[in-house]
Image (cartoon, rainbow, N blue to C red; front, side, top):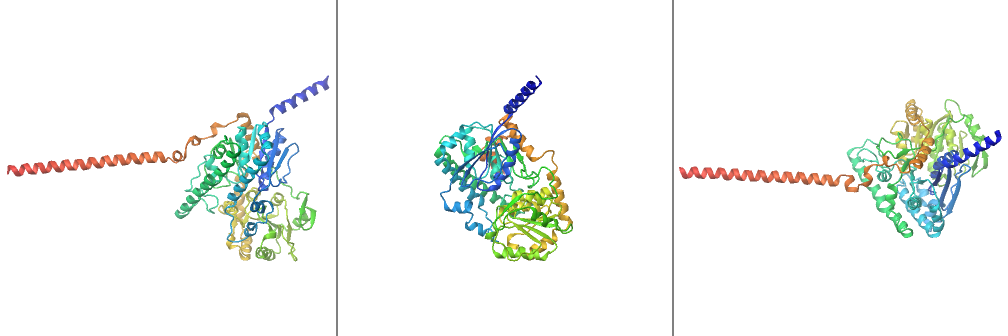
Length: 549
């Protein structure tokens, strides 16, 4: 009897869990692997909460992101019909991958190029696999999570479904994203991404910032969105405009802590989530895992553990990473020599270098190279003293989370902007590409050891960490929240219903100017008429007096 009751209770709990489970569709962009890596943490968490998760990717290559057991993974292969896009995103042998090391090349059009490539991918997907796309549209999902960069077919999916969805920015809150969700972005004090400016703007910088603000909106509204709309109308003539779909996101996620960026206003539906930070303290001993080494085969972390263990408590080690952005095999010898000269200048300091280029014939004994590194583990290690970073969003935020002062060596303008958020707060140093030299890097490593940088970084770290929740549980809450409440009208502003002229009060300003002109005109005519009357009266009196005399 007791066993029957236990069985009934078990079945009841399973049924309740199934009823309360949410069906969530994730659609990351595949052009940059870090996007799927960032989103996977939330997908894994939702599965652990007994929700049903489908992970949909389309593109020339499936990402290698590992997902939790229980996630349904769908991949639709789609190839570029453009060799340039193939060279940039698939083979990664385009000239830009070489030019990225050039001091005067900043890859300022990276996002525009990626958007144009994603539009091509979406068009080819709908042309070749429209039936599969339609089947996915018909499948019921409670919530859809869409990457807000380079994923036009994700926008189309939520529009055709008419479902609530989360639009997830893999960067900080960009100008065009803020415009879509109606978060004010005043160019008078809020620097536009790509300008390399801080919030302290001079008159000339404000002019440049305003021009950059208008340029960012022009590119997205006039160059990108019309091309997306053309694809949508080609395959689904009755679908809404892409901008209207963007604007109607139920919730917007932003991939950085709210205090990381310069202070700015934002709408209640904008939530700041960081998926790449650890939920608990990392062990002193690096995790034992196997890593692929293109030059020496597969080896375990034991060699790295031994190398770290030999670092002294005083000097520690310096971590050097370039993420997915750079390929050291395409770096000029001059750049490598700068690092090698720096390593030799500090023989007591150990350097751990994420390096995937041609092996060196002679490498200083205080240097460890490997194509892939457990960055979180290393930044969380008590012997880590400095992080030399290229400026990737996740890379910089991880440095802040672990309280490690950063020396920024940006390769792109986006990386420069990210690192500026560190150096402007006195928590690190930034070496512009045009000033990168052995002398500058040697000086930076000596300067960064001063206590003031560590102290500022620890203050920054404390403010970022001091929240009553983890970002992962926070993000999962909002997924469940919009499933329960569907739309969140209280988190939207009346600006959604305003056009450009109404939003910037152009109509009101013109009306007030018209009223003022009318008042001044009326006042002018009253004065002129009064003067004429007075003048006529005076002349009349003088004339009468003259007659009487």
